[in-house]
Image (tube, rainbow, N blue to C red):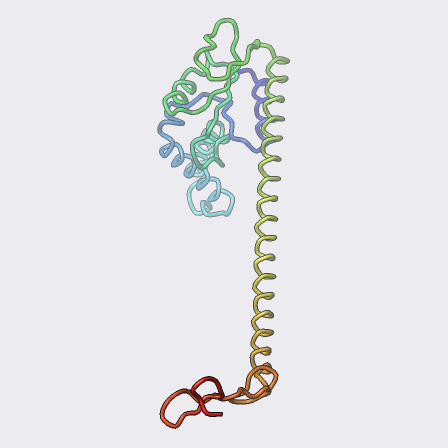
Length: 231
């Protein structure tokens, strides 16, 4: 890939904070991702030691050797240093030149987007984009369009997360209001039960009216009146 094309891809990828590879694709960068992550961690460890002065005690030759190793790894792995998992999709500028990356993505069932020229098979990628993969303007237009689509998707995802957060906060506030209302209702019912006893006392009906006692039938019992009863 020419230097001008590398700059276009790098600028678009950094704009949306996405990983990228503009140098030689390392075999196993996707299928052997754990080993690649170890190399990235080694590169970051060397860079940290060079910056914080940990390597000041070693010889100059050893320090230069580590610096050269870091530069080599940075050139190849610098674009994927922040990636922590296998990507969900892969965009390829030249599917013919990057056939190793395409084969690894297809093996792992990763969604592939690719610019397909007349000398390439469009059936090798899931979403083919007919374009001239040798022209700088063509690559710049399509790569910038892909970056804009990624930025739009990230903005929609962030807006959805904000809406979900607001909904959860509103639901929590409503539950708190319901709990406060229930406590007030319970206190009111308790006060009504404590101060609402009948004023008539024991043996009296509503509003203090005394119930009339009627003698039942039996020995010595007199009915209020009627046939066969004493008045």
